[in-house]
Amino acid sequence: MAPVTRIVKLRAIGVGWLEGAGPHDLHSVAARVANLLGELGPTVLVGHSVGTPIAALAASIDLRSTKPNVVGLVLSNSGANTKGHGDVESVIERVRQTWGLPLWKAMAERSLGRVCPAELVDSFMTYPRRITAEATVQSLRSLQQTDLTSMLNELSAIPTAVVHGNRDPARTLSHAQSLCNGILGSRLVVLDTGHTSCVEAPDDFAKIIHAVVEEGLRARTGRPD
Image 1 (cartoon, one colour):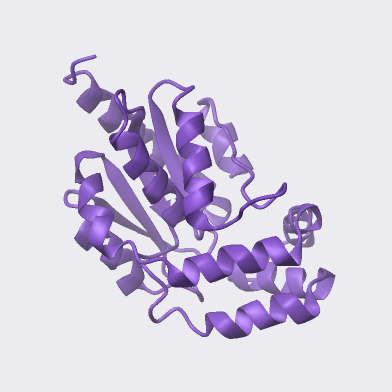
Image 2: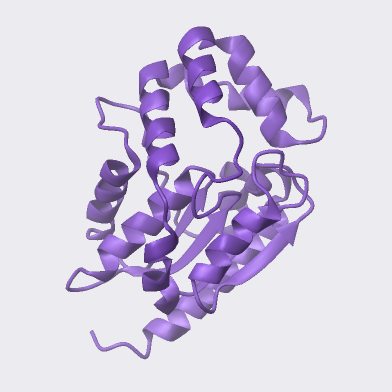
């Protein structure tokens, strides 16, 4: 997200969800995000890949608070569940058996889609060095068990953009549409990217965030404090 945050020129707070002692299941991480939201003002939550269910679950928790702070959502390169998302079990097993630089590089190159500059791939290597295989397995297992379908309608009051990369090797257009179908009034944006739309098309991604911010703040002005 770093290229996007430089473009949008808005305060951005990244939440490290696989670092530390955990727990690393998506519901626990979402609860931590929701607690953080209580300390902030109006906020647009941006979730990429596994971050999408975390953002959706955190927004749902926030909406039930006495003073909700989420004014918008950007949900990128993900879906309502993992149906049709390939064999998650085999990915979990690869993480357990081959955690290390070769696996990280292979996953980064797959996510980035087209051939990318070596420095960009190298930058993707910094994050997995800070986390453990066990934390990653916990999050993947939780992702496998999480289905947002029945709760997405709760988010229909929040301006939402769903972003899909048309060359995404991990998620299909139908995955993105499953989010849009559940969140009434949400907008689907398809970009010419792989699985990391925010990195591959930062200018377009920044425009999406700006549009959601503006819509969210306009909607919030009509809310009672």
